[in-house]
Length: 267
Image 1 (cartoon, one colour):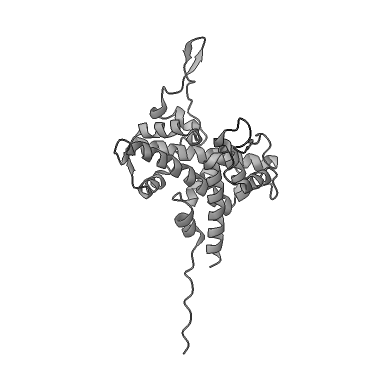
Image 2: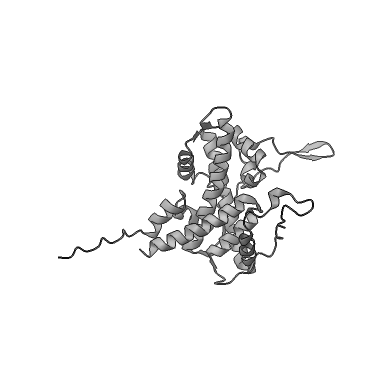
């Protein structure tokens, strides 16, 4: 009898999304979308949002890890997060969280005629918000920390958790806006230059010229006007991450994750 070839193991979409896309569970990602918009969210949009959030958090942790390594530490503390953001402005995402975190208290003040203007008092909102649910990604944050061979004190985990939640909520809001407006309408495009142009800043050079056309293509939307799709999340990513290497990586990895997971579903 001829031996039958072994069938490839079937991978369910939920399993694949957790293992291959992000440590952030798809159900939690979709819950953030539900907090900020009543629109339907496609599975591919959930994958894209999870992947982009993973890329951003991974880069923040890597930068904080480098700061800690200078002091021969493997446990991250809030000072490492501040140092990471100071060294790379691209990492300053999820800004709403900074108003709620003791780590950033006093670092940003508003002056008027030489007098410090106190921040507005926060009122307790009845609507769910990213800050109110900012502990939902703690398990995913700890997995990312372990993947880079470090740990973090509890307050640092809380900050990373909060940044992830707020960033993802901002991403969801912008993706919903892209659907409503039929593309990226409110935001100008980042001007990309080559290093040989007079006065060019090398940090503004597009790391991949082919990505420029891809970003421009996202400015006009096609598809269902009631459903947030993958390209809507990618368009929102270009609005949240203004140019630079981090945006390039986030878009590239989200597309690669989509292709990988789409292939896994066909097995």
